[in-house]
Image (tube, rainbow, N blue to C red; front, side):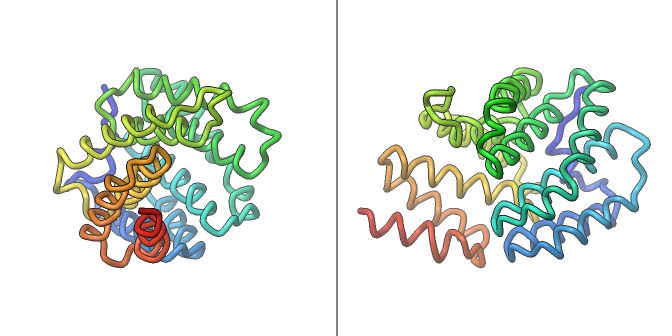
Length: 240
């Protein structure tokens, strides 16, 4: 069965505890709260992991926490969970070879590892690139897979396959897929973070007006998005 990540995460049929996890992760992202990230993971770990849906849900929660450590550069928290997360995702990939979102998540975690230690780029860079490409190939309608592919292109140096124009296209695709299901945008940290990334990609390609429009769109969706409100948007406006 094809794994549709966006449905997995935001479907109305998800149990209450999972909805609570989504809200905790959303608030953890907005507040840059490490304690809330850990609370969300603890909450998710209490739920069953008997089927593919539940296992991928847990993998996404681990990825969310690991990504969340980047804001405060909490490498201790990252190191605490990264190996467990990778083992879980690799096991899931072995059991579900047609999933594109699992390799995308693993690609993102490798990218986080490189961000913490640039020397790991020698070993993990090509793996991360290949996994990101695998993600969009296996699940071309996954907002998550396109977002991670775009992130890979955005942060990878051009000499090693990075491409800002390709990143812009990938982020635009991801956002369009998110927005094709408007009922799934509530408490969705990944959606607003992708808007922030698209704005940055526009800014780096000298599309300043598009960057400003994107940041304003993010604030319309979430007025308390401090990163955009107090940092990204003022910087873009100042650069005009």
